[in-house]
Image (cartoon, rainbow, N blue to C red):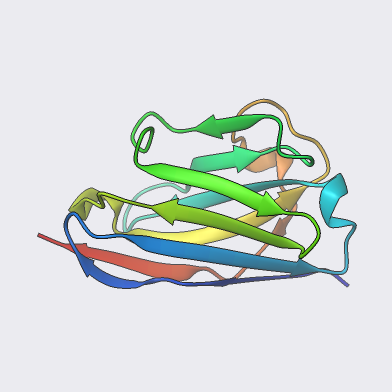
Length: 124
């Protein structure tokens, strides 16, 4: 059985930083594309950043380019999202997800294992 667990969320002021971590279990980690998604109240879930199995292909949403960095450590089965220069509009529940195929973007439909989410709140 696959489990995906996120951690690292919290409350920060605008301009601050947070690092999210994700630990999936029950799957061959390097064989899966991984992604970070977020959902703000009243809005649809959106792809933030996704990475291929071996980390050679990356995707960032335009809204986070230059501020967020996705990375993975296949030896430790860990996925990270370093978030710098946070803005109030980054406030959302952030989800980690795993999918068998990296499609080149961050399409929710390509990810079939999801965590419960970790809340990120950025105050102005």
